Length: 524
Image 1 (cartoon, rainbow, N blue to C red):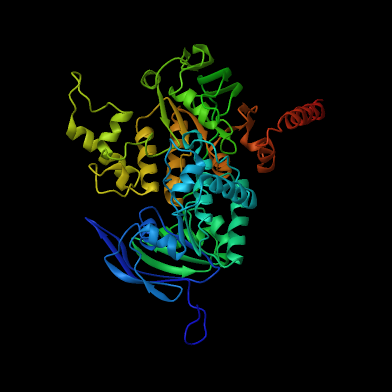
Image 2: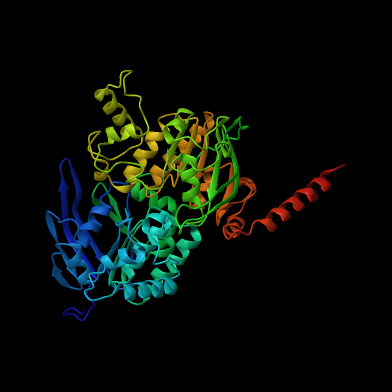
């Protein structure tokens, strides 16, 4: 829409947006302008007010003050249905999917399209998935999907509304670099077609590569607006948190005894849409971090269920913890052997949404339970407060419900809960999903401190940079099979990317040949 001066009106203009909650001002007099066809980043540490602002735009939260204009016209968005009618679509960081329904049924429910048949929605999903490189089976039940696959469902559902403004909250937090680059191609294509994109991410290199404008928020206010293409990661960090995150200290050390061993694990999928595990073998020693990379849906979910004890169909001897057969043991008995576990799904598996942070400790920690089973409430709240303080969790306190936290802050709390337990063996899936650069650096430093104290750590992540930064050795999982491990100092992103397609056999043979050649040249 053109204004009276002949200039094209901004796609979105916010002025004076303010939103207060008890004890906190989430948005404080926020201004934001997004032009048609612009990919505009919103950057800030966890709890800076980004997600609240996006929910105001989408009508999921009502502001206490401020004005909003869309395509030059003043609007008050009362609910997401009205937002979608205007042409505003949003992909949330926490997925809003019904797990018992199929992909197609979830998309159908979210389209507000009266008279559109499920068969037509299924056809459009397949068409959109193919056009934008977002591989998904419309018939699959959502409960069989990994988090990366759920992300694709949310993005496809948003794209099917034909948005003029697309809001993406941490869209690549559970995507591999290859999948993220595919998404960027999609977003650039949408922008050339005139769609405006609001892009929230803590991955500074993504913002610099993708976005032309960046609004930086701090403590609920706009701290500045810049062109991220003219900034460095360090300068963006300073704008966001006032400092650069410290470099990780990765000290070389000899690994100790084997804490976790998996031997020739074969496990048939429980779901027709799952992945069979074939001859999976790995070991993790005390004092080392081992990583597992892979494209979402390659068998990570099935392996994690088998390791955590949620799936106990494995032969007892195929999984051992601290030398004890554990394939048949339930989760609480594995914890008694020293295992602590962080699942990839924060709400529902990592935390009970309606329970307080203090009571969520009881899911994996019983330090505050007396010998007769009495709960020492004061000790429990003090323990939760200690984790909140140590990991910089922005919350109203130990009594705050888990669902009241932003995604990044809940991730910090869950990771803090398990790290603070001083486990002998820690298995963490997507350990820094959705947290800001400062918090990610702290979590990674805490993991390395656990390793240096003798803990064995297994990290399953779709973020290659994180795995290279944290791990001593790396495996890749593809189609339910696990590659041999490779020392991170010898691995390359190109090699790991090749292995993600299951093509490691030739690479292993080449590496063995190279090692034999090096040894022959080194011989006197």
